[in-house]
Length: 332
Image (cartoon, rainbow, N blue to C red; front, top):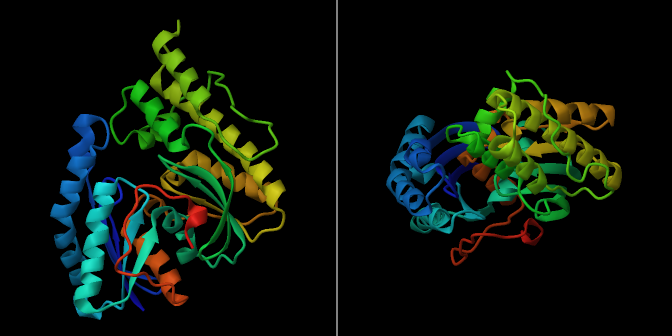
């Protein structure tokens, strides 16, 4: 089965073509340079860039895969959550292709795509647990099957990716900032004792607003002028401690599972990958995480999630609409 996947939920315009588990083509236009001067993503500018780039990206992907558009068996596009203007660009484009070629269409939830990505690289039976961490979400998700999900823990305030981004902004690090924190942390020393919010509590929830505020006080009001790399290292050690503790609580709550998946943009973070792997090994749980290039928003994850749904005959009506937000438990 040859699948076309289209992603446009934020600041990456991405197109991928896969054949079962094989990636035939993967094209991404990153808007980082466009948004860098603003210090973050500007929705209107992002939407225009998606509209300009999506057609040439599809042409490039088809050329790389040595295919014609008619060779595509199923068309998939990200439906949301995301910046609705950008989501609508890729989603409408995908539906248009499906209609014009009379091909099946699959609307793919963005979070579901992140959560399922590791299953393309590894055979991971259900049920398993996903720790999904991104700029907008931090959740523990029990995966019982395609379209059968239960959120057992979430953030009570800020997402983990947002905490990384805000820390970077306080330190005046360049955009995209989360990766810069990780980079500096690797050369810094953990000499600041930042708080570990909710560590030791019995429910697998998160809170990062207090940690974010503590970083702000140190950077903006502190009497000691700490090196940026030491702030990053101290922040990242605190995050790793909290995440490790929360994972232990989640694993205890869910009982026997077939593995833990670390997914989402934050899953690129090398310190967290290492820490979570250690926790899983200590608890006798298999650990899975996608290749770092497939943790960020990409077309492969949309194509793969669409493939998972297409195998089960879970196709979508062309009348379906994109959405800016949705609870993953409501994705059936």
